Image (cartoon, rainbow, N blue to C red; front, side):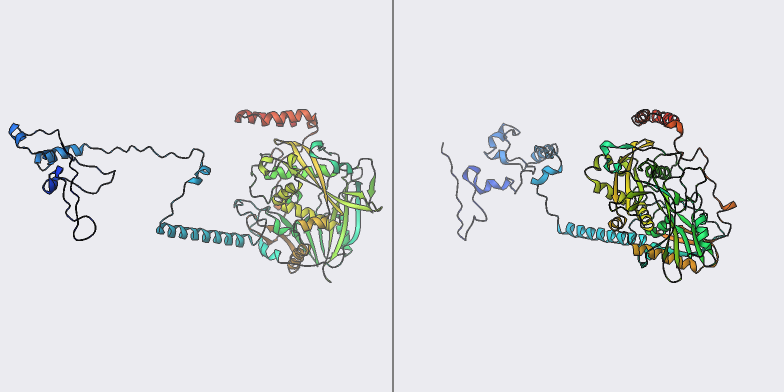
Length: 585
């Protein structure tokens, strides 16, 4: 049997195959190909049958009459129905394996080239990016105008913050000053301050504390026998005497002036009482005022809890920081009994009463021909000058309460990264450090000593350790924290000029608890006296200093605090805390 190669079509009219190509003889020529289905298809398309050799004709006669091309003929009705039934049961199965996703995350996807988006997607994405930029620009603009370019303003501050004093209905608001006005002020005091009087006695600084480090920390001691006085301006007998002698027109203390000078940096609410008597102004603070306490994390982004029962609440930490500063200022002194006695004794200490080492310098600044200020300034210690003179020192302490909240562990960072620790404190306590610097500049201190005091254990707020002590010159430190002395005096001068325009009477200057502004209210003459005085908290709600019984062994206190902190169960943790407080009490 020979093999039929077939017919090669020849196109006589041009290039390419002819329109009607000749079929091979083996397929019956052109007549046989009319019933053969043919169409372009892909591999995923469903195909019909090409030939069927399994079909049987209706009978032997039909089989004898069937031609050789019977298997290719699907024109009969029966075949069409059978084919449709078979096609309806046909299902295409995808045998390709599923794509394998990268196992190790996005960093192994560098070899997968992303497809370029379509033109429409690019336009939508571009419009979305422009909208995001516009929204971010408006938000920055809103925040800048809301904060009045105030660097320490906390945008997420709770709107439920209370004012430091209850505003009474019969008070009249006389002035409202936004912080933006304060930042633009500038006033230079050309004359050097004049020392009118020096009272009290101060002790020498112990230079051994300059060598204290976290590996050789010192336990913070308690000085309960020494009394610390926070006397306001009008209760100071020396200031009363200077006012009678007409030594100045404005009288205040260094703490009050520092609060006014650092007004744009403050976040918490505070108030100052202003009394206009004749041609004189007296800036006072109320009993139990916020100015007597030291704020903690005031300018930090994260707010502290408001529950006073929590040892890490804002009020509890303020009380703790105040006690730490008082004890630190007395512990770093030489205890050999040598003191520097001033012109007059301590004006607030009774006879036989042991007062803390504090020297009061009554200094006078001349602002212009009509206005001069007398302020009582404090210095805490003296230091022997290599040249034979004496240097006045300011002693303050920063306190660490929980490294998990602040984000910086002092015991690990103070030796290697002191700058990072100080930068964190400048961010979280900008107002407190600025006030200390102002007080040092007003008092004419030659050196500031900053102590870094941390809790022995994060859950023990009674026992502390001195990790290190750093020294700074006040003017250098003021330049480092961007504290401008001309702006400081400009703020004081503007407030004095405003109050001098008022009639005689009593006024109160209040920092708004939620907005960067201060308000001045005119109040009755008996305000903050009798009915207006705020009742103190009950003793069980106050944060009390540890009693004498708490000075047991340090090991027992640390063990109790550590056992309390390691207790994971909530109920057991609460019981452990109660037992620890009972042990302290």
